[in-house]
Length: 171
Image (cartoon, rainbow, N blue to C red):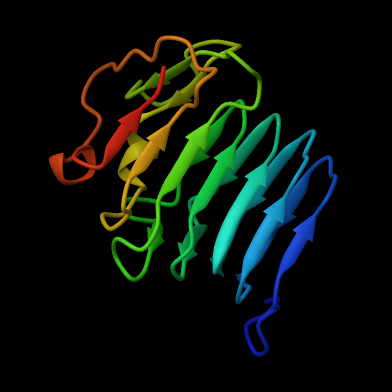
């Protein structure tokens, strides 16, 4: 695993098609991906100081993956974000030290929160109940969308009230 015995100081990806973190990765400071045309996949435990990843097509945390910040903000920007690592698999410590932002890569692309598993259709960033439940309690705030987001419908049950208290939806 990259960085497990001697953690990387930082990891910056300036342009990529598909990026796969196939095993555990430990980075003391920031993981940054400024441009990604394809899918960025996290298959193992990924620990970092902060994260700002842009992947136009998809960001995927698989069933065996997790994201753990050691205190800095997490920003995930993509037209599809799937957090499939299980309940609480995207976390921050110490609690309250920073926020997480989930937003679309395509300006004005609609976002849907709380949909059933599966994509509600092309051209929509769907954050399913599974994705929301992957966010561990402890973020100072959970931001969904940005100033360019259109209306954000909330469908169905999106999880526990301890998570919902920290969500800010912009749209």
